[in-house]
Image (cartoon, rainbow, N blue to C red; front, top):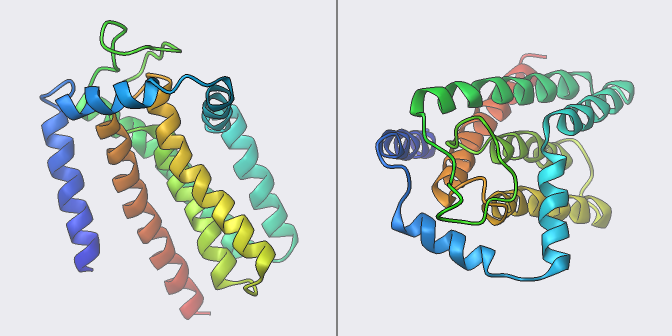
Length: 203
């Protein structure tokens, strides 16, 4: 509970501050460092990871994964995982509207793609943290620990980490936006896990 409260307080404080400050010096510094990486391979990776988090593709990934879980008798996991991810995808935009922070501008960073919605928090980071984080939890909660599951867990964790970097690399978010996405995603994931454990405890 203390960890939840700490993360919640940090998120609320950060959300309040960024509502008044378009960007920090640290935002500019981190964006400059990350965007200074000039490699076609890195660029392709960043685009690919961000593409996974786009609405239609992420919806398809969540849908297919949940369907497979349901077919293989993990029905509770499928329902809670999909509903939690959908809930986070709906709640994120509400926070964006409330905070009303503008996206990074082209005169400050290199903007690879123009987006019309607000910047804080990063929706990609939020949904990745919630959905892929829940899958990592399930791999250790419901499946036998073996090399295949360890490798899959590492791959999912790297996706969660890389998507934050990709959003900064493409110039669509500040590092503080990404941090807000991780904080909110962690809170949402902790709530999801608690809900799942509570339901299983009553069965």
